[in-house]
Image (cartoon, rainbow, N blue to C red; front, side, top):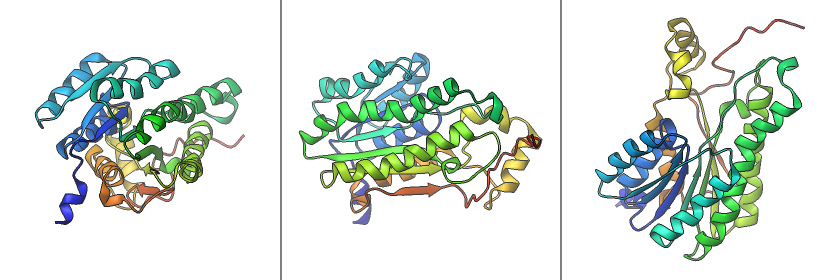
Length: 262
């Protein structure tokens, strides 16, 4: 049956930023299809809640609380998967983000910080994960990027540039790691996560985002997680080096900060 292609029985995944939002939804989706997971975020209580939901599927989640801007913490996730489960098949580089800033407030130091959080930590995890994945034949890496890596708007220089870099990094390393490891990305549009609550809790801003999205709504985290499952499983076995755009048809930023001309 076609649905069997989505099964992940016996597989092990690492998901960063998995305490809430897209990361949590992805961990649960992968577990529902048979994978055990190593999940990480800053807050232990969030990880415990996700782990309980994973356990309800019959699978196991190992939570690692820590600052995912710390490369040592990120690197440890792959080795933890190997220690706990003896293998690693799927990596979801989900953690990331940045506060939009006007041009003159986007300092070189801030730009480096954003690139570190959105690109460097993914590479750090991948470097440790790939040898472990190869022990069992290969696997799938999924990088969560953003529609802002493709469209242009004021205030997004640091965030958009870093997400564009992550998208092209995906294409580049897909060549390095083929044919045994597939590498793809998801360019997510505006998604109902805790990071967006400050916006979605303001009716005017929420209405703007919905109006500027052709499907006139904000995505649920589970809709992005469905894409993660597709790319992680044999259903997506003939995809590598691709960026799957799950963005409601967005062609312009769904949040306009109305920054004035210089």
